[in-house]
Image (cartoon, rainbow, N blue to C red):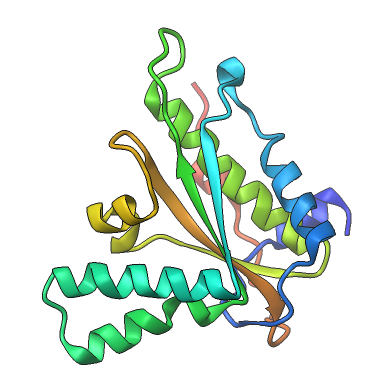
Length: 182
């Protein structure tokens, strides 16, 4: 797949099955993430990879956080299954640092770019991925259990695996409708 085709046909792949990326494929995803624009070369990100037993740990973290908010049993069951929507979940964390020339917003954007780069890299090698956020990305209990510091922010959970079905390509959007000239 060439770069233009990749960019113009990108879409989320929400139905994912095993196998997860192998070691070589995961290396490609992580290396692609590390190549994104990064003002000041701060590498303001961390990738927490959940696979196999890691999915169970992430499930327990989500359930515990939901319990602390008073969730009912039905919601707890739903939350417990969330990490199993794919054989691998990569939690992408913006790890901001104080810097005179690189505001926290730029560091968050860099972590978001890293997430997008991993998703695109997955598509380029025939894998599927979907980037999700949701309440758990902002939950203090989830942050604490993942060992994040107060200034860290989850920018997304990237679910990665093998597409369960071939999704139809969505129509191309006209990007010009969102542009204007000065």
